[in-house]
Length: 190
Ligand code: IMP
Ligand code: MG
Image 1 (spheres, rainbow, N blue to C red):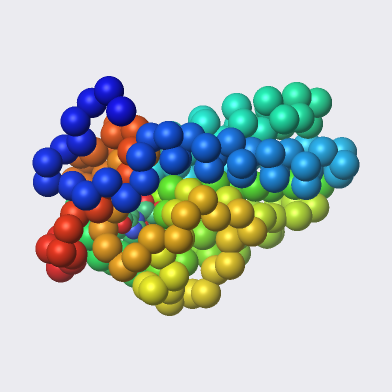
Image 2: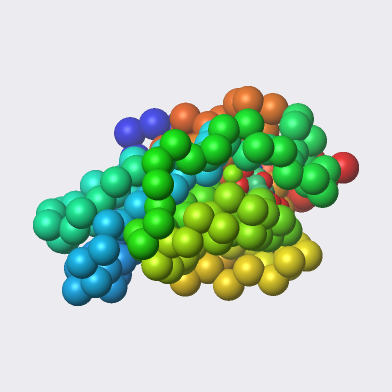
């Protein structure tokens, strides 16, 4: 590692560990979708999933450049500046392309209570009649599930702590870190 991690964080996964896992997920997804021939519509959830979505689509491309892949983004928010979900999901940006008959792959940074992904599937995706909907998340925090979401592709399971980096923020900070950090002692939980 060519840098010193932020002293207030524990490193949960290093940059190399994240890179290797994303490469594995890209291969798995490429193998699953290549035979299907449908458009693969990758739907990233902003802001947090910008980092993972970018790295994941490159990994898919490297394994299967012939997959007809398109990308779209939604912006959903349930947190504001807090570390605990507010319980309601707000749509700040909807998808902008048709997904009828497409295979939709939702990409998120972390599935926590499950509310965001569930809301997206039920309200913005299913009514538009895609051929299939699957979810790929960099992290899954099953200890806090309220709506039990079982992502088809998961990078890492995380303990019940607040994590940052690789797209994930705390009050707008830490998103740019190339590793995944945890605030020790759970001191950020409200
Ligand atoms: P959910 O709706 O509770 O599943 O969580 C949705 C969103 O909350 C995630 O996509 C993240 O953007 C954010 N989130 C949940 N847990 C964390 C965390 O530990 N760190 C940073 N963001 C989080
Ligand atoms: Mg998110």
